[in-house]
Length: 441
Image 1 (cartoon, rainbow, N blue to C red):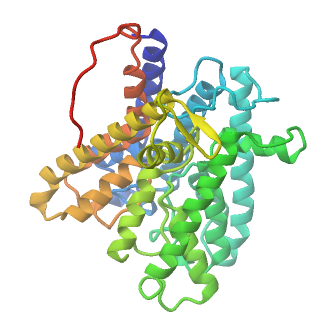
Image 2 (image 1 turned 30 degrees about the vertical axis):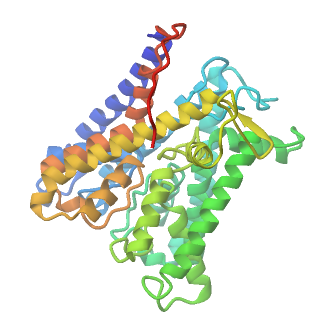
Image 3 (image 1 turned 180 degrees about the vertical axis):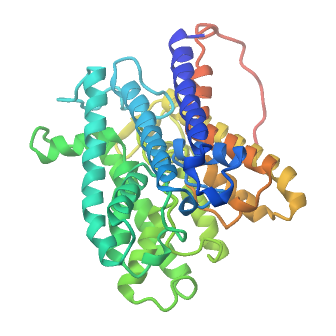
């Protein structure tokens, strides 16, 4: 096995495991909960820490139940978890010979990186600086909006929600998430912008900055494709929710509020987890659409979870286009190599398998407790996509169910990435076996 992949997966797993363990220990301290609460049970401390580090947002204990110390711990875990995954993936994408096979397009090797720093320390510094700058800008916009609404400690709330939104975490210091702002388009649109910015990918953000400052003549193919696919998913989702929920959860809203909520509902599954309307109150088609968006997630090399839009794009392309004699796909005046398409397909299959396995395990432990298949499927998709949306099912789960979701969140954030690294062995790369005769279909 390639030692490089072994070390990559080991470092990644160790980093997140250490953060979760330290976070669970901090949340178990008496200072994290009000004295009258009796403290946080260990399973809930572990669940909350995992959800925060994996920037998921699923909770078994309302974030409002924590003290300011406890909420600050959660905020730090979100920030460290978000920066950890974006730093790790971005370094591997940018450094020569360190690409992520399943996360990049076939053109990532040749897409223009003029002016992009190759020094790992400067790459990390750029990521951290960009993250803090965007989060600070988001907090500055949210502060007066929260203050105007009479929110207690609007400064802390603004910082918390800006970090949570940019890191696509979905944690909120409000008991109803953002439902109290469903008729405040300015708040919903600000949070939506932070979610999209965090989910578009650091390379795309840097590419956009270089283009806007005139340092590049045009955006790379990767950036253009990610922006187009993101726009299509957001616009199509918003249009669908506009019509599906117009007479349901959006009933009684004026056109501006309805448009803002439809857009927000389309963006939050990718993969932030805030909600402005009750997810349990959505119509069945809307729940299904939300699950699809949660499974797809954001762009490669971003904080967002899911299988990523590049993977979904290539798998869909492989379904509708016939490969040429070399096994390559040609579309939109571009050629996608066999290795790239196979890597995306393999990643998709692994993700789907793990999702089904998680649903099966959760059905075994929560089915007898009264959970239906719809709740279970929605919950595991949200956990695997590190989204955080729920049909009000998470707090009622038993210990075994919580452990299943903890494992699903971890796998959705870092486990599958590590599994792909571990699966990239070069031991048999030069062997040619006899062709297998196998009927398909």
